[in-house]
Length: 421
Ligand code: PGA
Ligand code: ZN
Image (cartoon, rainbow, N blue to C red):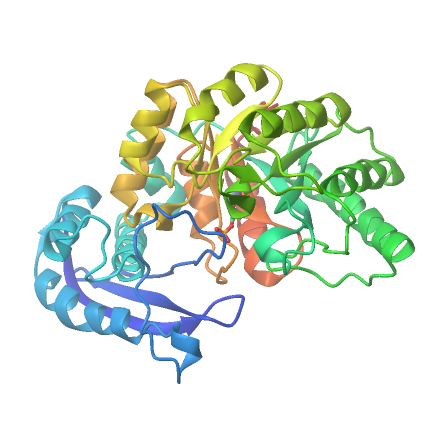
């Protein structure tokens, strides 16, 4: 039983220098937990509402003072003095208080920050690590560590749209530990930085998630340069390092066509394009290969890609249990990209995770492009036994906070790395 003594919110800045929300939750027993929420740029339209002030004179409308006022005012007043036996009781109380389907009144950023800070305070009160507390939310024991999928090259909304696809990621397939995975990644990242300089005259300036973002002439160039970087690092593409891609295709889908190269592609053409990449590059996972509103063609994509690569839904699913149920029913995907702030409470994200698992899907636990130095995501990926964790590149402290936490959890638990792909 945890009784809330006080909730205090604070507007802080994320890795893009935009405001976001941090909450400190004090329990009556003295335990304290603080947590911050991230923010996306390549957002799905079905995401829960991130409340922004809309004042153009301050942070171009992106201020979070209203969300913070809701934490210090209404949420603090309604929740202080109340005891919650379990996380879902607190989350349920906040949903009831908000009263909207997408958390638009109090703000998903305010609600999630409270949900996470409460989780941390409860873990502290019980004297258990946060990953253990998260595992308990799903009623499971610790199993494996997630395999990192690491952003190497960036395009799309994270890199000023200089290339159409959003991320080409590397998957250290043969690594047996987080430690080994990161060392392999470093070798490939350095080789890719040298390639960017040689090929494009670009120094290692990085995009929002820390990926390299030279002016690629085409989507294919991102993939072939990635393979060349793996080879240049002395590693074998496919066997030692595989590729994953976040196509984020909702963002170049207009009037029923995908604007990926010179010729617009219809949905069938886009599927053929993805299959062509699978034939030519060692890709083990395709995220948002089709647009979020192109439901009619996702089942065909899944059918044709199944067994070769994961069909991973991000914008399509938005960590939303109703959308995941629909995708399971029509067999639109076989993997969930889980971002807690797309839905706005730990309890609903846990439900999304369990639904995906019940259909035999893989789960990737993902950060956002706007992150903070908070590292709860690493604990979540371990506690919920994510197959993958997607944090961005191995540069920038808001990304490294998560990798460094994974290293600490690995050292502490000795858990094995999940067997994927
Ligand atoms: P976002 O991008 O955090 O900007 O939404 C991440 C992703 O698309 O996976
Ligand atoms: Zn995505």
